[in-house]
Length: 111
Image 1 (cartoon, rainbow, N blue to C red):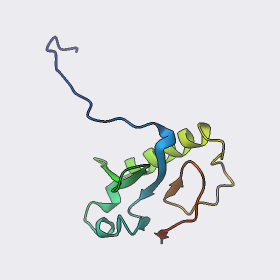
Image 2: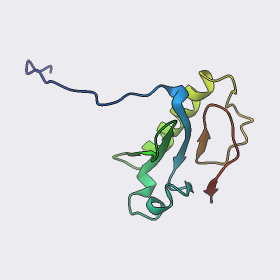
Image 3: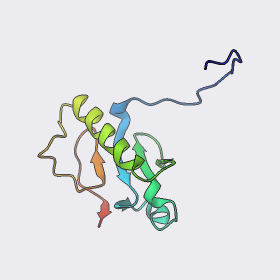
């Protein structure tokens, strides 16, 4: 049922999909910037979203196992559909890694 109670929300920051340089599933891959989080108890629930102009990646921790896989697949589709460098079935990215924008060399360790 809908509630009649209203809430005020404030969005602190927003990014466009084109600003994402890469996304790492921390249970599978990590870079130098995310290595410290890769062995955390919650790494299997977390992905790191690297955004142009940000020094540290945005860590997104999901509530349940399996949600990271679903979000990674959704991001892979969105980035592929919005990019001139399509990420498709022939994508050469390692599992657990999505490279957005211009494809660059991987500085990511994937198991």
